Amino acid sequence: MAAYLNYLMLEKVFLMIASLATFAPVWGWIMILLSQIPFGRKIGKKAASKLQFAVLGGI
Image (cartoon, rainbow, N blue to C red; front, side):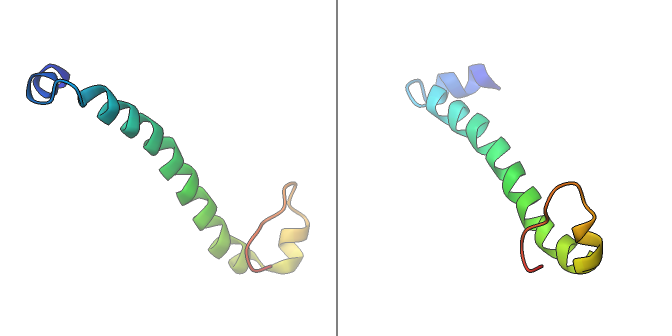
């Protein structure tokens, strides 16, 4: 696949692969942070106060 992309877009392949490699972990962390908001609301203030790490977003 990389060889094919290199053949099609010789000068843009490195930038494309580097951008995807950077965006993937950032997207994962965004999803984790967004999932913490409904989690914190669902467990309530009392259970959230017993957690080892603080739950952000609406508590």
